Length: 122
Image (cartoon, rainbow, N blue to C red; front, top):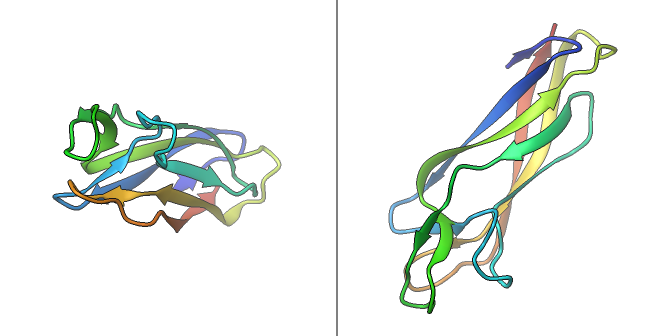
């Protein structure tokens, strides 16, 4: 992505949840459920607010009440700010995406994947 010094921009992280699976939303229905989270590492490019899509409330056999989940394809959007003093040239916005995938019958161990967004600062 290209971003200008002293300007704001948005980073979109495309997420795909395979058919038959779901991940808990960023606002899970139960306190013991592991939410979808994005955490950015401070660097030249500064990450701000992250916005998630509206979750679905879905009922599964293993839960007495509907759960707040994401399924299919969706995007998570983070606002970024490039300081006016940032050097012109390539930079990287680094972070981590944490989630717990579940099927209709079981949940799998939580995972964290590295995020790396190349940014060309102008």
